[in-house]
Length: 503
Image (cartoon, rainbow, N blue to C red; front, side, top):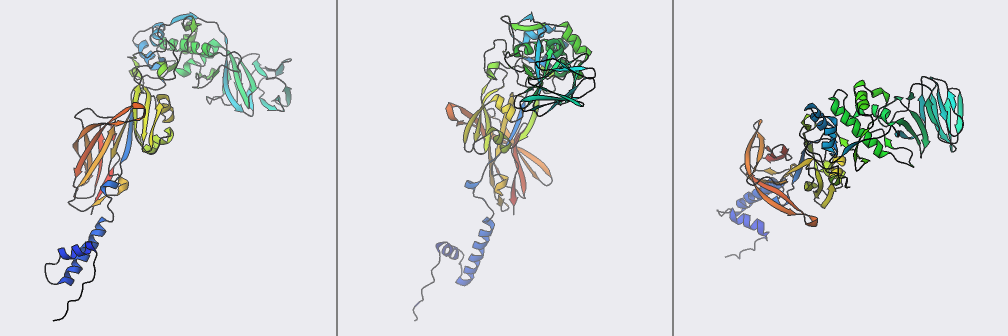
């Protein structure tokens, strides 16, 4: 009898495979079969992502109410009050708590029309003058003047002649109005009442010196339509008057800007007989508190409630308190959204740490606009105020509702399964839904979308500084028969779409 020869060593995995598939003495056939099965398994698993390595992808849906900062008088709300018979005094007293109506004089307001210029151009149909510290220089009507600043002095070229001024020149019409040929910060050219002074502050600045009541003629019809009910237009005139008076600054070169940094002012071109009448009928009337003109902030549309100033900019003006705004529904942006945003579109402008999964409101004002929100990212959490959210994300107002919905595995995981296998889809939505709420699992195959409800479970996540974020978690097990697309939804909110490939 011959001595048996030792077998070749095998790996433990291969050994188990050979043993499992060797029901007959034909060991070489079993080995070949086992090898094929192992290789086939490796091929099938090559594109799969282990469950532990699957990622979650989020999408944001933003809805909200109102347009503007929310402090003071809502213009569309004033429109609604006027439509319902309210007089301008009652409108003002509703939005500015505890005020009285006082009288002010027709003082001069200095309006910054444009700054940072190398040259300023203006003209006048009639003769006009340019004056520094000496005698006035008369310039023929219809002649364009170009002002530059060279060697520490102002040079004015008018047609074929020129003059140099040591001090900032002021241009005045002998009749009619000056024509501004350099575009203002409001993008306007054309006629402006009063005088124009050109000063140098690192660049040339064009400042319109104009009596208050004339200034209002170029403000009111730009801020609200002259076709609105007259009491609403009159309320706007009074608010704009108080704002201008309160903005006057001694020792400064100008009081207000001509754009939305202060009040939109477009000069003669926008004047309208109807708004002119509102200005005349309220001449000198100014909302006051404690005998002083108020900071009469106003904005377009409240969404149904204005906000207290302390929750937007800080400060303690007692007349700038949030109030109900029952007739604001006339405004076109009383409600807005949904806006769809990706995590990068949220996180980039806000300087988030890592990939954002939630913008979670931790403090709201009385309106309830956002006062403070947590931007929750994969690399940490940072807090932002409502005004920053509005400006950095380009929102209509800080009365906003952020809902994020996630789904895992994400599309980037490229999950591929064998027919008959199951996959678990999971996700979170911030903030938490109500107890017992469901989300919808939407899936597309055979040419159409279908859906089913999925239960949720409320959970709590700890945030820095003692805050808590409440969210809802959902899980669905699926066994697609063919390659299928999936996403979760709740109301207007949707998660990203993921695809499960069936081989």
